Structures are given as structure tokens and as C-alpha cells.
Amino acid sequence: MPITDNNNTLTNPRNNYPKLHNAAWPGMVGKGPDTEACIPLETMVQLTANAQVNGIGFDGMDITLHLPHFDIDGGPEALNRLVDLFQSHELAIGSLVAPIWKETGGGSAMGTTKERQRFLDQVEKTCALGQALRESGLRPYGVVRIDSADNPANWNTDPVTHTRLIADTFRKAAQIGAQYGERIAAEGEICWAGMHGWKTMTHLLELIDHPNIGFQADMAHTLLYLLGYNKDDERILPKNFDWNDRATLEKGLQSVSAALRPYTIDFHVAQNDGTVFGAGSHDKTGKHCLATDPNGKLNITTDAGYWLRDSNGKLTKNFKHICWDGCMFPNETLLQPQTWNDILAAMLQVREQHGWVETT
Image (tube, rainbow, N blue to C red):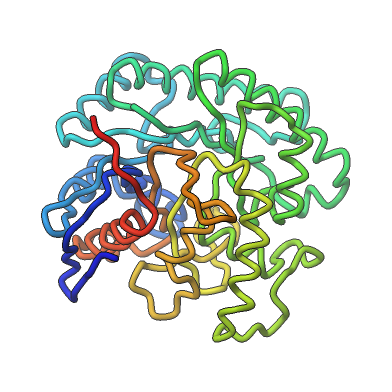
């Protein structure tokens, strides 16, 4: 086991995989005119590059491809600026979030024919960019992330039809991804239609039935699956659950991860306090907490193992990198260097417990 002290130093690090990534989107998610300004991509990259724990830094970042961070319709100039930015900070790019929402030029995955086509057009643009980034040498791993771009309330008006439409749209997205050598990952989160419960998410993946699409697990969001937010009939933990009952919590985590781990091709390390939160235009979802939050309900290092190891405790090695996700924090918090040092320390703990060594 690694050892940390109050200065977040890590002694005797052993593993160099999975690679450790920060996320760029906390600088945008939940921001806007009615909250506070977005943090520029350049600033998020600089904060990531500056983070260090005992001489170890982040290996790269996962990014989202919409303004103000990136113009997916910006052509070669936008691509070149992106490559130059990351190369200048010696950071890799990993997974890409496709801008599939109405607000960013896409449309609902269960919507009209035109809406679904706009969704797929945005997926194709993202996959083409992902291929170009791989060819540049800047992106050695990672997936293209999507969600249904709609909400559970709309899904509830006709669950069967809407699930079928989402599955069809996602299957077509997987086929597009395959043309560009990209894998597609569907994000499990309680605010997305047809993906808002763990059994519902599993059923959707089974219905899609395509080898080029999988699941993106986020520890904060999958914890909320256990509480049945937006899908009470799939609740595992009882109402008014006593969070000191670690044994029952572990059984719940085992149930959800056992169902979804076989599909998992992208993974977010995160913390959650068992509540929901929304900011700006973002619907309420699992509240991300800081890595050091005393109200966090997860043991980050231990509970990451439910997604990184199989039911027999063997490492799955289903992905080459893992990413921290923590959204809807105040800019004052996000702009503090210590925030990212603490997060990096948590990520290093996960890698030491559940990582491996590869020679390059």
C-alpha cells in the first residue's frame, strides 16, 4: 500500500498504469450567465500541468468538444491550436465528450428523426476529430462519450418507445465510431433519459447489442444508482440509509458494478456525499465532492476496485487511463492549486491499489 501524509506525498509508487487524467469540463459544467463564468480550457490545462505529488503529475486530460472550450466546427485551425496547447504542456488527450445536446448543435437521442440525426452528426464530427488526434500522436487511448441528451421525465411518458429509440441511435453511433476506429461509451448518470437507473442502463446496453459501445462508470453517479434517484423501483439501499453501515453499502456497490462492469470501457474516479446537485442549466445529478470532503460516502481507493477488478479480484485492464470527475464547484475552489494536488493524490492511491506496470 502507498503511504500519504498531510502534504500528499506518496512513497514508493510502483505502477505506471492506468494513466491518470484530469477533466477539463469542470470549468464549464454548471457555469453560465446565471451562475459564474466558465474557466478557459487554457487555464484548466495549466492547473492540471502544474499539479504535482512527490514529483508525479497528471498524464493527460479528458475534454469536451463544445464552446467555449473548443469549436468542433472550427476546422484545421481549431485542431492545430488544441494539439499545440496540449503538446506545450506535455499532456495527452484521452476521452472526448461529444457535443450531442440541443444547446451545442445536437438533439435528443429519443427525439424526432431530425433531432436524432443532429445527434449522430455531432458524434461523427467527434469521431473524426478523435481519429485526427490519434494520428497526431497526442491521443494514445480513450473513447468518445455520449448520453441520451434528454431527461427522465420525458422518457417516462413512453419508456418502451423511448428506450428503443435511444438504443437505435446509440447503435448507429457505435457504427459511426467503428468507421473512425473509435469506441463509444454511454455515460451512466441519473439525469439522462433511459440511463437513470442501473437496471435501466443495463437493459439499454443489452438492447443496443453492439460490440463498439460500452459503459462509462463514474463513482459519484453510480453511487446514486443505489439510492434510486429518478428510478425508485431500482433502489438498493433503504430510505434513510445509515451510511455507517459499510457492509450493506459494499453489497450494493457489488450489485451495480457486477451488472455494468462487463460493459465498462471508461472510468471516472469521483466522490459523492449521497445527495444530488445541479447548477446552471445542468439537471440535478450525483453531487460531486472534493477528494478530501469529510462528508464523502465512498472510500475512493477501495471502491474504485469494484470497477477496476472483476468479482474475483483480478484486474480487468479494460482501459488504459482513468479520469477524475468533479463538477459544479465554485471557481474559487477550482482555481486553487491545492484542489488539484489533493485530487492527484487520490488518483495515485487508486493506481497504487489497482494499477499495473507496463514497459514502454
